[in-house]
Image (cartoon, rainbow, N blue to C red; front, top):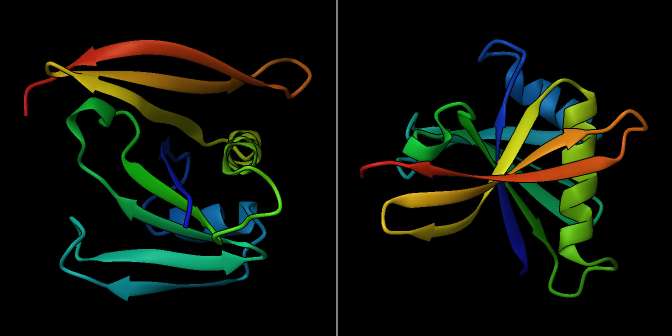
Length: 135
């Protein structure tokens, strides 16, 4: 199944971030799951239409300013390309006050990121930067 990942920052406190993310994405069916595979020992997951969205706190050194990780997964044959779905998801998160960025490339302790914003007409704008970090 196609998957895309994005890091977000939240204008809400830690307890309010998951419900606000899923509310923003119009996903009513979501829940918290315990798992030792995640930094805080749990993650949140919900399904809406043809997508599954997972959310967890992340400690990626190149995304300290975006402390949450969102994974978007579609069924094997989605009705729209996953990158279009990702752009729509990011735009909705930005409209709700979240910040968003994603890793484009990793090379020699440098992460190339794509940073998202909205222009005056609510069109998605993508800018790039590079963040050096040590693992």
